[in-house]
Structure formats: C-alpha cells, structure tokens
Amino acid sequence: MSVDEVAPVAFAGRRGSLMALALRVGLLTLATLGVYRFWGRTRLRRWYWSAVQPGGDPLEYTGDGAEKFAGFLMAVCVLALWLGVVNLLLMFVSLSWLAAPWLAYVLSVVGLIPVWAYARYRARAYMLARTRWRGIRFGMAPGAAGYAGRVCLHGMFTLATLGALWPRMTFKLEKYRTDRTYFGTLRLHQGGQWTILLPAYTPVLVCGAFALASLLLAATSTPRMVWLAVPFGIGALYGIVRYRVLSIRLMAEAKTAGGLSLIATPDPVRVARIVGFGWLAITIVLALPLIGAAFVYALAPAGRIELLLATDPTNPLALLALALFLILYFGLFVAYGVLRHGLITMPLWRHYAESLTVTGTSALAAVRQRDRQAAPEAGGLAEALDIGAAI
Image (cartoon, rainbow, N blue to C red; front, side, top):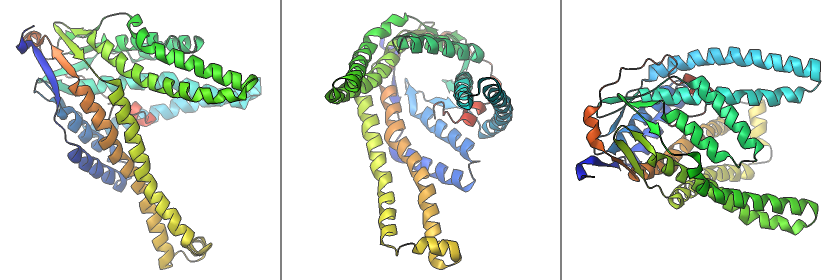
C-alpha cells in the first residue's frame, strides 16, 4: 500500500484549554439552572471532534444546542407519558393480581432497558448526522427499534449463559450499528465473526469462574476461601477492561467502507492506567474540601450552626454557613465535570485516536456528499434518560 493511501490519526487538543472550557460550561450550566447544558455539550463536542484529525483533516461537529433543547423537551413529554402509563399498569397488576408490589418496581426497571437501547441508537444516529470529515457527512439508517429488540434478545442469551455469550452480544450489536452507518455514499461493513472476540474474553471467564467458586466455598465450607476471591475478582475487573479495549481493536480492524479500512492498536494497560489513576486523582481532589468542611464543622460549637439556621436564618454566621455549603455542594459537581474531562475522557480520546490509522484513502475520491438528515428529537431521549451517549 502506498504512503498516500495511509492516513494516521492525530489528536491536537490540549488539556488546559479543555478544562477551561469545561469549567465555563459547568458554571454557565449552574447559573442557568441546567438550561445551558445543551449548548455546553455542543461546545464540548466541537472541541473533541476538532481535536481528532485523520490524515491532518479535523472532524467537524455541526450540532446545535437549540435543536438539542427542543428535542429534550419533546422527549421528556413522550417519556413521561409512556413511563406513567406503563408504571401504573405494572403497579395495578402487581397489587391486584400478584400481591407483590416489589415486582412492579423490578419490571419497571427492566422495562427501561429497551427504552435505553432505543435512545442510545437514536443519539448515535444524531451525532453521526452532525459529523463531517473533509466536508463529507456521516449518517445512520433508521433502526432504533430493531436495535432495542436485539439488545433485549442478546441480553437474555447472555444472562442465561452467565455471561459466557457476552462476546456474541458485543459483536452482533456492533455489526447492527456499523452496517447501518454511512460516510457520504459509502456504507460501512462490519466483517468477521463473533468468535474473534473469544480469546480476549477468556481471562474474564476464567477469573470470574474462580472468584465465584471461591465465594461459594467460603459460604458453604471454607470461610478462608473468601480471600482467594479478591485476586481473582481484581483479575476479572482488569479482564473486562482488557476485553473492552481488545474488542474495539479487533472489530475496528474488521470494518470496511468501500476501499477504506482501519488499523487499530489501543493498549489495554494504558487504558486501565488512565481510568484507574484518573478516578483515584478525582477522588482525592474532591475529598479534600469535604474533609476541610468536616474539620471546620467539628471545631464549631456543638449545634451552633444548626441552631442559628433554625432560629435566626438572617444571622451573618448562619448566612455564611449556608453560602459556604451551597458553594461547596454545587462546586463539587462543577469540579467533577472539569476533572473527568481533563483526567479521563480527554486522555482516552487521545489514546484511541492516536492508535488509529485509516488506510485505502485513495477511495475517498469516489465518495459523494450525503443529504443532511433531519433530527427532530436530536438525541433528546438520551438526554432525558441521562445516559450520556459520548460527550
């Protein structure tokens, strides 16, 4: 393959600029009681998209905060009506026929799974429809209902096999999404079979089986065996991270779009290090103001602050205590968002981007523009369920 047919992916973003943007977004979202969230998420997506540069050409995100806000309001109305009717029916059946109110809550949570899957697919379709590279739009064919059904079906198979068929679910769902994704007039295709993921998943099965066996032995005959479950449990957790990274690599390398293909080399150890140290740093940084507040509270006269708040809320000391509490409470949420972007999300994006190479770029000459897709919901259902869906 000639050099001009290979396009390494670079990541041009800087941590400082992202954290400053995340801080502004967090403060504006707080000041507007959450309304700015939709415009803030748009600005963050534009930062991330523009930082990823396949072959030196950055991705573009063309989404709009106003359409997200309108889609969110629409989704909230529909979701509230749907959940209200379903929950009332479940509660009626549980109380009238089964005399088991707890069953209604369980079924209500289970009933959210297809809604969650539907929302994830629609959110991904919206993001792709608002993403461009070299001026060419991405897109995704309709299929949210089919995806939700497949999530439920493969989920049942996975549960019935105690997790043994997780790779099959991973592959089948990714293939369903990929085969409905377009770059301009090119349609993506997920090649391979789900069995390519089995070697990456084997450590999870082995460690998980030994951890479960150790817990069973500890509960029945040998209590000291519970300690053996600890290393196997840690091994299973790392195995899940490793499987996640390797599954992305293996499936990415089996994707094609006309003459385009991918070379992916993400490192599971590096991903685990980014996530582990990132969460550790966030926990330590956020714990410091809580420890300081607890220390100050411990030094205050017993019951003094509560008494002032209850009997004389206009007292300067009471107002100061209330103001400090509100600043600390809401400040922790803003600080968490800033730190999560700077210490976890951005390093992961950078690693995955820099470990990716697009090959066969000579096929881009034959790609034609795709019509702009309408997005009346604009990922609003995912926002209403607060399931993220990327940034």
